[in-house]
Image (cartoon, rainbow, N blue to C red; front, side, top):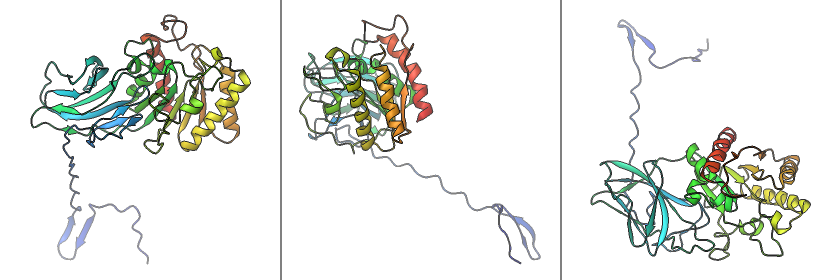
Length: 347
């Protein structure tokens, strides 16, 4: 007779002839030993995560591009300092606390009041170099206490990229990129996130020279410091959130032209990220809403079921704008509160 072992579990009872019944269990597997290399805080330190689009061509000085690029790292000890070159404004958060603004050059002390002894996490976001602001966003390393080191911060499960214009760059909010809806939504979800945005950007190239994502999204820096093409193998987002169209209307782009360019933009992004979820937001003041939704429907009709139109009608409170277009801190927070659950459900 064939013996069936289906449903057997270890810790079985074994009968040994003449010795009665015995119970036994296999030896417990030893817990894996986590061995993590201590880092020195240099730009090439593998414990530092550089999120977003960074230029790493100079091994001693890494440069963030676009808005919202940041570095994230764990460290031991009670103090941490940044090695900067020339003057820059930046924002830093330690152990998940509110971001604090720092402006300076050379060595910038992020812990004027020493921390408690132990392990900590650090996020640093540099002010975007764009428009009239020409600060020196160059990371040259960390300085830690004697005997302290960097460690890898806990991994984040997802990556979301936000594509847009001055709204997605956080213009007019109190801390620019870090008080923007994209940065806030990403942090709320515990995801990595990037903001591919510069003030004044359109989706469409126009005769009067509007910088346009249809050509510049594919570049490392969007034209800030050259026109080199971005290496899309550097990171692969799980989701791409697009908020474009606010500026196209002011540059005379017709509805049919905008719709065609939006459809083409979605198609091209899909070619770069075959498995990502794409979210097309209705612009917060409603420009090209029908055309944006139609572009999504065109992609759905082509068989792409992972492109979604997000209707943002009513997301902004009555006092959520700092002018006629740009959300203030309250507006960005309201947007993040509505967007984060949508991203969480889809991703």
